Length: 136
Image (cartoon, rainbow, N blue to C red; front, side):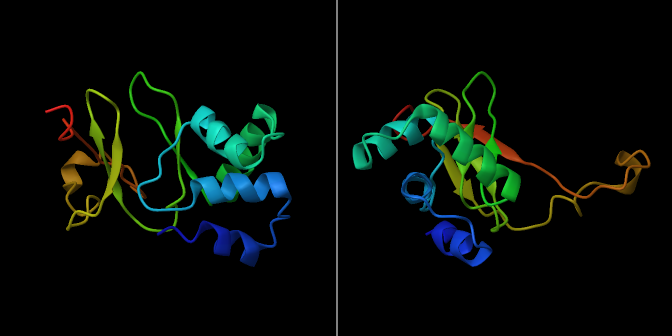
């Protein structure tokens, strides 16, 4: 399970009722919701929450580095609260379901020196694509 709420408390993030409900909606494993999905779930808990408030809270969480934006081809941005746990993503090419995966090995170490073209490589993003069990 994500420890998003705990991390936000430790950072002293002002926890208004709206911000708390956004963080609660995002907290958990394999959570990759769109902003609209976050708003819909937040509104179930706090009906008066506005879409703008959700977008603002998501933007702040991304700027803080507590949530990562996940962008997949042709789909809306999704928000991942597992920002502090190294992982990659497995994406269904049909329905867009996203799962966190933790492959062994280091993608940075797997890039040969001659393929770095003089770059000082600091990060790697690997996305695995396929069909989820429901779509297969």
